[in-house]
Length: 283
Ligand code: ADE
Image 1 (cartoon, rainbow, N blue to C red):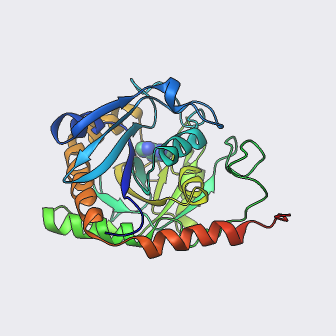
Image 2 (cartoon, rainbow, N blue to C red; image 1 turned 180 degrees about the vertical axis):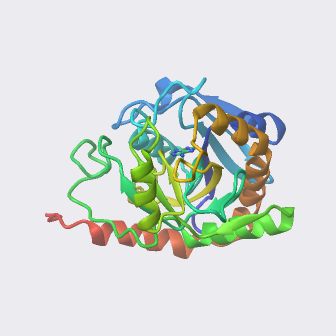
């Protein structure tokens, strides 16, 4: 047993209800009025409970009924709500487009870096909004997605016999529109493997909050760089739903594996990063 009590927040969309109904024990629902924090109101109620002896908290990124678009998701309020209820880890799931031939529809990928093309999102907790995050903090973004969570996802996939690709760069666009063909081709030239709309600023804000964050992405389409193979929302939903049980199984297994590991060192390290990244005078 380490010095931190481990609690795993799961941020996702479809499939979260399945986790809540099938495997969560001691479940409880936290209402929005209790989750409001210095950054505002999170996307929806948070379901807490236990999976294989590990405390978990489930949050749907786009709210109930998928009503909040990627720009309007209050990423900071979501992360702060999870932080305030004691989450040490966040596992995120994302649907995304594939920017390369070898990542096919339904393929799961553990991203290890990103290119942020968003333009209209508040992207730091350290902007004077909250007394809990004072000063100016410059967080290093390598690694951005936590490598130990990537190892956990890889191990979980191996134990479950699910195919995952470890590593990949995800380009995050503002949305809600998809990319143009020229943009899609540019992202490929930049070395992007995936294109999505929601990892930024979630991944960097989680790091500022000192939370260990990892993501599992599912490629649902080939965006629009391929000849006569253009993404549309209906196809994204269809492919995601066809494959969503792989993600839910993986998340459940990953929670179990996180509970078996030691995290003190990693959590201390993140805390130090936040302190040393803060350049404002402390006196
Ligand atoms: N989510 C699923 N497919 C996507 C795509 N092609 N671009 C951005 N986000 C996506």
